[in-house]
Image (cartoon, rainbow, N blue to C red; front, side, top):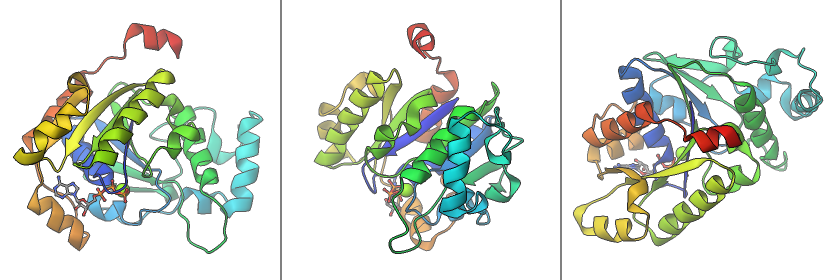
Length: 261
Ligand SMILES: Nc1ncnc2c1ncn2[C@@H]1O[C@H](COP(=O)(O)OP(=O)(O)OP(=O)(O)O)[C@@H](O)[C@H]1O
Ligand SMILES: [Mg+2]
């Protein structure tokens, strides 16, 4: 199962990705986190893992990546990075880090002035996700970049579910509605996780969204905030994360969507 975790900048995508990864791993699932955000630098720290190599570097930088993506779209699969079938076990080892049984794959980062746009990084994510065949007990969590661009790049194309994180902010609520509209237009079911929710904002947030699609409401939590501040591994356990985790593990794609895809 592949889940895209998206939402407005700063809503808590990376935080919830890691908290969900831990909770899912504890239920016995094998979890791969894909860092598809070209800007975030520290996801490995939140997981408590070492910094892995970056796929775009391992593919030979922009030039090498351009060639490999072209080969991949021409269906020449002899290249090491784009095997016809990618699995948790044949991903390039130098681009993986691991902590507590959770794997982390980092796609690409912007590092130099004028190096070019992030479309190529989206292209790698799309190529990997479309080839990655996870088994029944394996879950892929994709930490998207802020906003809606991943939809424009079709990175979500092979995802089973979009989870949109919504923080207490009008724009964030509106963006969640738009994310659902775009994703469901492409046949991908979308659910919401409210984040940083306190009693005084809960009702307003729920009012702005389809209630049936809200799978958890995570409160503002000072331990999470401080661990994030210090770049430490996120260790907070919360019943609300467990609830989201149960939803994910029991989720079955509607038959009509299975047929559509
Ligand atoms: N439930 C929470 N309680 C307290 N603080 C939180 C919570 N969730 C996220 N935060 C804080 O919100 C900030 C943004 O979180 P995070 O980096 O996970 O967001 P993001 O959506 O991944 O951001 P970006 O768009 O930059 O990738 C961090 O300071 C983090 O500590
Ligand atoms: Mg992030």
